[in-house]
Image (cartoon, rainbow, N blue to C red; front, side, top):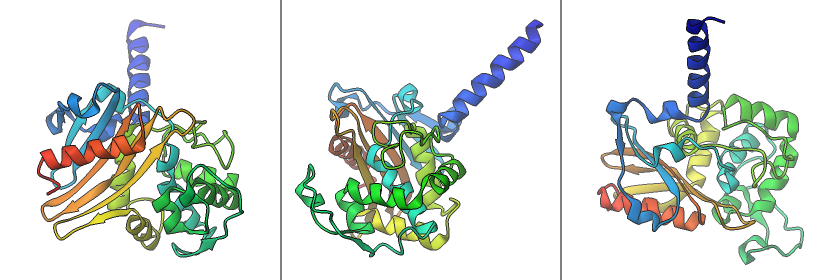
Length: 264
């Protein structure tokens, strides 16, 4: 194999690797700015991707980590809800599933839930049941169609996103949320609007914050917060992960949004 051919194959492999981890979501150097927010992470490893959809400016903390694929944990509920609605595994955001009586980690989980309330309380059992109703075939089809991370659901239909086979980078999470904001995912506009509405966590006169946390409950060693904020001046999407909890990840983005005068 000659040198030029080897170089060409190596270059193609590198491009595929970068594309596969969401590097394209970070944009070119001219549109990307490094964030210096080490203090916000309080000594813990983590990353943040923050994008202004009005001008496509991207702000990144720890660019290398932003391309590292990690398990999505409960942030997958966003995709799971979209797939559940699209496949009619659940009728709408108000459809209720009865609690099975099994006592789980958090008191708020131990009751009946709707699609919306289970998103709000992050009740895993509801979305596990939803995934089983969707089934392997349709779940695999839609996870592939939306290009969700490594698209690997082999870890079990009701657990593949929980410290298992499915992995996604912060850059890919931000790209996924941007497509949801623009209703450019392979789902009906109605279903995308429904899930965006379900993600609302704070609604004030000057902003609406949509988000979803995720925490690796096995060791509390990985936390996520993904979403977007609508303001009078435009919309920003974000994805944060940290070697900690989802609550920590959420607090970091809120702090940065305030420092940047995006959240007032």
